[in-house]
Image 1: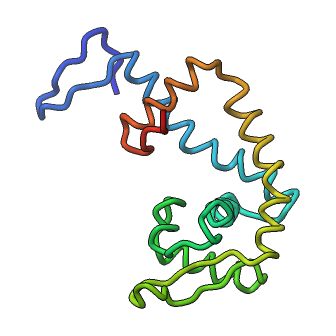
Image 2: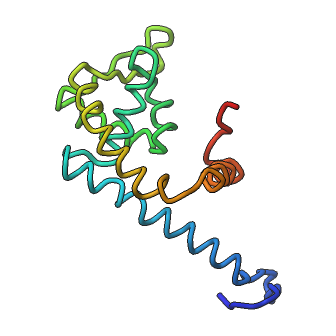
Amino acid sequence: MTDRATPEAGGDGTTWLDSGEKAAWTGLVSLIMLLPGRLEAPLQQAHGLTLFEYLTLSHLSEAPGRSLRMSELAFLTNGSLSRLSNVVKRLEGRGWMHRSPDPDDGRYTLAALTDAGFDVVHAAAPTHLRAVRALVLDRLDAADRAALSRIAVALGVQDLPPS
């Protein structure tokens, strides 16, 4: 709220952000708010997919047997089970996915990618990759990319990549 050289605690114990903290926070919020739309626009234009739909299809395409439990897929896509269920229903209607009870534990539901769904994500992947490179990766050097990964881990939004 206040740009102070030295953060001071307010009467309620709140410590205001200093200029460096404010710049870091504002940058992060801008990334969180703006980047998804910028990544989604080319997918929408070229393939009629939302970013969430693309990520759902993509995670399934990389899973063993192109199938995951809905709860795991919700975690990977950072979506609630209800949001994911609505998206999966829409993707099922397009013939790109199907759901079935998990044969190992009937309390769970498996989401599986159809061949048609794999074709869609395979066609959309280059569009997404071009956007990821243009908007993020190509603008960062190796040290910046490593720092971004470390920051994501520190904030608890990503596991450490395998060494």
